[in-house]
Amino acid sequence: QVQLVESGGGLVQAGGSLRLSCVGSGRTFSTYVMGWFRQAPGKEREFVGAISRGGGVTTYADSVKGRFTISRDNAKNTVYLQMNSLELEDTAVYYCAARIIGTLSPHTHEYNYWGQGTQVTVSS
Image 1 (cartoon, one colour):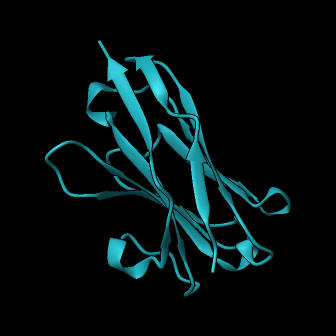
Image 2 (spheres, rainbow, N blue to C red):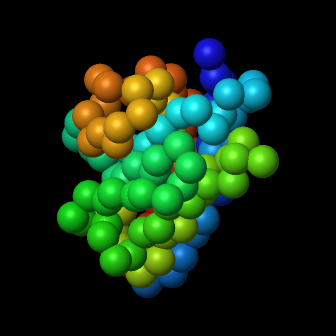
């Protein structure tokens, strides 16, 4: 089991950048595929991106491709979401999630553990 804690959210102007962090507990962090998801008010939780166990493979939603970058540092039990060129539509609560099975997935139900989320608000 792993516990996840996100941080780094906040208020940023459109066009700005933020970096979110997600720290996992335990010694087995490197065995999990890690994903980032977000949920805007009144909307379903949606996939942002995911990264493989070793960090060598990533995948992104089309809406963030080219603007967001996921990376991980297994020595620090941490996964990052670098968000550049932020848009108003990026406003949401951002969640990190851990998946036991080693393939990347965009589906929320295929992730086993979730953090509590961190709010990102993009203003005009």
